[in-house]
Length: 315
Ligand code: TA6
Image (cartoon, rainbow, N blue to C red; front, top):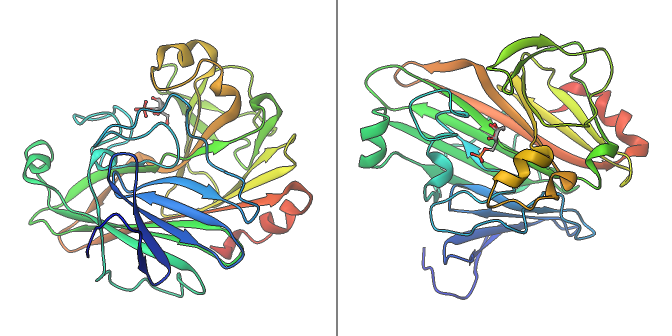
């Protein structure tokens, strides 16, 4: 693959260079929606609807440094979520250079119908094997449907001689109009682990979740479809997932925002992280086994979001 500065056209996507000279892949749907993925971290850095509106949050203070995840978009947390393990926060995959994978094995059951997509691949470097001595292949397919729905399908294959366990998350920074006008439906009455109190376990109340202070929770055993309603924008994000039993909900609110150098003091008002994840129970793979974790994001006018919620099995 030649990497001159002029964008390289490939069937269904275009390869360009990002701010660091790292390769970035752009995918467009025939109706004008688009997604951009950086090979740095395999991180989705932009998802726009067919009106060109950005649907993901990226901080105005984001730091664009080589091999450092950017504050926004969808970083991939692997092989560790958060700081529950010996590795760096959220694992190393988000700080690594991935490659475009031209020989990706096919996905099952029509996961690719009518979608423009790109396949990325991450394998451990010798340094990675020193801190996490397990040979793996992490494949990520990023696709955009005709309607502009974004799907991320990750496959972790154990190419090691012995079993290994990991946790995983799509750390999804949703762009919202005003956090105090946002509610999440689908997590009612679920148990959650509260990261603000040593992962103590609580049970969520019966109503939709709204926001008036810092939240950092792992909702365990969540349904396959949840909705994030942005009242002011009259927009609903429908989040569908498979192979990812948990949902992490995070908003740093005022005080924590001030402690983050790559985040604006008031930017907590315009973002909400809702991460499809496997956190509570680690995933264990025997040699030769493969795990798949699917996320599909749709942004629909709130008027007809119930249509989407009524077909939970659509993924
Ligand atoms: O997803 C929630 C969380 O684990 C929070 O605890 C917070 O630390 C956030 O991730 C961001 O983590 P980062 O390492 O990207 O600053």
